[in-house]
Amino acid sequence: MMKRNTDELWNEASRGEPESPLFDSNDVDVAVVIGTGPAGATLALELARAGQRVVLFEAGPWIDPASFINDDRAAFEQMSWTDPREATGTWQLARDFPGSPAWMGKLVGGTANLWTGLTPRFKAHELRASETYGRIPDSTLIDWPIGLNDLENGYDQAERAVGATHRQGRPPLPANNNYKVVANGAARIGYTHYATGPYAVNAEPYDCRPATIQDGFASQGDKQRSKWTPLVSEIPRALASGLVDLRTRCHVTRITLGANGRADGVVFADADGILHRQRARFISVACNAIETARLLLLSSTAGHQNGLANGSDQVGRNYMRHTSGVIYAEFEQPVHMYRGEPMAGLIADESRHDPSRGFVGGYYFEMISQGLASFSQFNEPGGWGVEFASRMEAYTRTSALWICGEDLPQATNRVTLSDSATDALGLPVPVVHYDDHSNDIAMRMHAYDRAEELFSAVGAVRITTAPPLPSGHNLGTARMSLDAESGVVDPYGRAHEVDNLFISDGSVFPTSGAANPTLTIMSLVYRQAAHIIGALRSGEL
Ligand SMILES: Cc1cc2nc3c(=O)[nH]c(=O)nc-3n(C[C@H](O)[C@H](O)[C@H](O)COP(=O)(O)OP(=O)(O)OC[C@H]3O[C@@H](n4cnc5c(N)ncnc54)[C@H](O)[C@@H]3O)c2cc1C
Image (cartoon, rainbow, N blue to C red):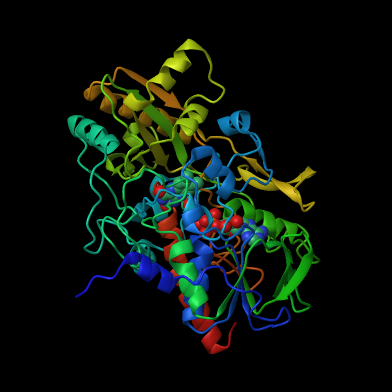
């Protein structure tokens, strides 16, 4: 069969930024989905495939991948959510980055334009954390009200959607230099579960996207489109359906309720800050855990004085972001860690639950490579002097690993609204409070020690550790529960207190597991979409 040029396929799939609005603001039969990241885009496309009209809101702009900038700082400014936030608590981010505790995208396709693409699945015991780990002081640990079997179908769908390597017959990516160093060290200390994926960047052309050219840019956006993001996959398909009305640069400021207690629409600010209203039959919030909690809290109204769907006082609580940290190892010979896909590799040996290590839950080691600007910014925030400079000079000879481990939910780790600071729209900014649990600290110290062994085994001449980066994984602020007292949504992400309001992002995670979250977020969305479509067809929604 004649091979088709991937650019031709992209041009066919993408109609670019559409004319909007397609649907009337008073149309009470549209679905409103807020957020165009993996969660919102996946839901919008599934609903459109079932014939449902959707108004899809995105606070950020449409950016064509060809305009992504291959430069750390400029790309950060181009794509990131830079609206003010506040960090409090004893986590180091409150000291090092008090106005920017989390890293999120603000553009069509969401944070997946910045993501690197590792797609591990949860393990069965991670959904039964309370049962498996027992009572842990100071943690609000609960079990998920669903099991791994409820996620498996969605995992398969999500892996097909993102084109995860190593899965369903797709080939792995080749090893880059950083991976070769790390895999060699892993073998020498007896690890056996390591590979260059699963990873949502094409090793060979797949689904209208070309194979990676290994240019090393992912968190700066991928100009080539070899990396999966909804911007190059779900969004163009959703727009081509003619059933999805994408409203870019439209920031939803409030969800409104009708007299019957059901959600009846949203208020949003357009690019000029002018407020408008959009009616809806039902609403999905997919703004990423911090902004999702903020929007619910901003939507307080009669009967929901503490925030929408917050009778349980659980909205904003149990914020999780994964136990993390970075380990840098310097060698005598060049490594050039920045060449090739930046996170293509993980070691799974420590992801098991084994309390003999002094903590519950597990963690992954994942490849990480940073551009020089990020390397200097995060290696030792505020670092200075001769020793620090010598580490910067060793950039080309440095290899690095990132820790991604389960952190425990705590009621006091929470997103609230500032009572003094506001954003450009005059809305209270979110305050993100976080204290490490003693389990998180024990896990991180274990990971630092094991990484030191690993890098020493392959001849590292200097090993240093760095604190967690601003959080790319934001979870747990509207958790799922069977009963309305201990959570915000039911096992389908439907608010206990507002039955046509759905939460579709990682806010619903009762626990974080050790796995990077996006594949699980998408798996839950496929499950939610099937539930919504069933409810629409039966007339229940
Ligand atoms: C550098 C980096 C690397 C990462 N690597 C990985 C990885 O390897 N594997 C993995 O699984 N995960 C990774 N992640 C995390 C991953 O990107 C997120 O889990 C994922 O994008 C979450 O999807 P989402 O749709 O819930 O939210 P997002 O992708 O954040 O999308 C939310 C969207 O909602 C919009 N929005 C928010 N509030 C409003 C509002 N009020 N009105 C209108 N729009 C709004 C935002 O602008 C945004 O576009 C990484 C993250 C970062 C930062």
